Length: 424
Ligand code: AMP
Ligand code: GLY
Image (cartoon, rainbow, N blue to C red; front, side, top):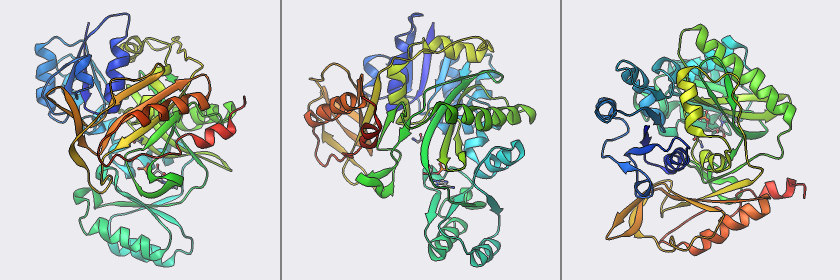
């Protein structure tokens, strides 16, 4: 069995590690991978968005399953590209990946499926959007550009001025074509959770929920990032709420995709706000979350490769998924200047002496003369596991203390609220 993982971040490192541990004993490949991944897989120098080169490689090497980490190749149609050649790929079709690639598609799909979500309007002209904002009494409000805009297309505007600025930026070409249409929607209040399910298009198997920390600074201050930490499971989420998310958000969405003929197999990720009126969908992603994957996979008690093969073969029905009772906490170490910029080439020390119960995933590292250095914004993901959140968190932060590079920044409050909620 040969498996190829596409991507180069901490999420892909966690995927490669978990897949490599399968009892099917796969031979692992990664494109392009990173120095951490290169310890457990053969890395090949193909960028994640070169769909044809990926397919040719998979064909030439007789890869049995390709697992796609980032959204861009899926939105670009990597699944169809592989299917045409009879190759198996874990991830949805291009038509279904629009659920992440287009906010307008996603919101309209939710409306048609009756999925609870923030009230919204779509605009394709700046004038109409600004008129709408002028007549709108209610602030804050959320402005979203239609395309992914590298994760920077969402503005939570506190007043009309900020909202108008976001609208101007979008139509003014700040996000290229991604800004030609926008969604303006109601701001939801509550706690946010990341929900992952895997599906073969008909049946689903839910993973345990996780929480992500998007802002750079402690106390959720400062600009948005790709994610500065995560923990799982969520002790604040009651089982009936989780069941409602599956029944009212996930299931109808997948049914609606099937109804419009958009083939979805792979992982569906719902960003959910648990409000006073129940859970509501914020957004969907067509792939594993980063860094949530890093706190979910180390606790998975079922063979991930078998589950993924079942998704591709349409045989998920009747399968079960087991979890360790452990908790996991992930702290992201970022380089100087992140998220506005990033710093490369700073030598990383302290990665040799990591204690038990700690996982280190490389997210943006380079290697020179046997030494690791920074090579981007989010550099390393340090995951602590343990029987309680206190223990998992203490392990993660103790490991963080032993690691050093120039300008290293991280949040000190990851999973702090979870300790307060923990019943021990
Ligand atoms: P999205 O790319 O749609 O997930 O938006 C990014 C982040 O913006 C979400 O994870 C939320 O934290 C926030 N956000 C998006 N939409 C809303 C909303 N309607 N109400 C409150 N926060 C939101
Ligand atoms: N952690 C947010 C994301 O993966 O989109």
